[in-house]
Image (cartoon, rainbow, N blue to C red; front, top):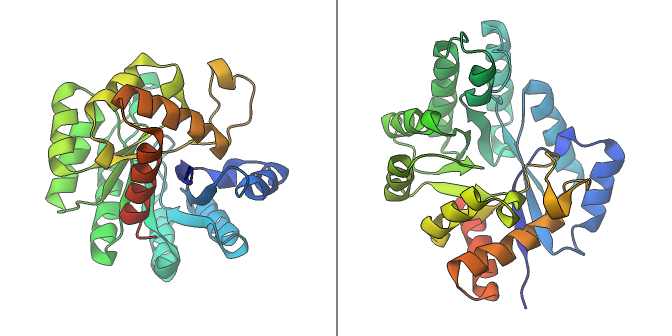
Length: 258
């Protein structure tokens, strides 16, 4: 059976050096052909770019993760300048989005600056015809959908998505993609999302090195975990395992123009 996979969202640069080497050495054995390596800030972009020059399987996305303090205007300018200089090296703009979890911890946090920065990233993506990798969950997802429509961006990937019924239906209608993490193995909320979302608009990811629980407790997050995710997706969808493997692989390759 064809078991090829692509990890559609991993913070490869956040692993320790020996862990990176181990993951890369393991890829063939676990039938993982590519890693979509998303970035956290400028230093992260630079590290992922370097990793992509060493490992052909690494496909870097450049952006700024929203769950952190906003960069200064000068820092933003430096980031966008660097991204423009490396636009031919990037597979997508990401990870970008809005700081949902930070605002839960700090309710007084002003969102306006984050929206402004996100709009800059979306304008960049539109200008250079790049897909976008989004961190946008629950009520933030609707706002991000508004912005995607404003900038007429169709190639949108909501990683580890969680949201209400209305937003799910809206995203399906717009043809936006989601990606499923290993917690689908034990989280009913994620299984329910898989049940509803078309497999034609789905990918699989690890979001490593983020750790997982239950059967993965204490393990380093690794692309091999994706195989367990795919088994559950096939069960939930009541479809053949091989067809699910093929569909998810084709989805990711087409979306990221691999």
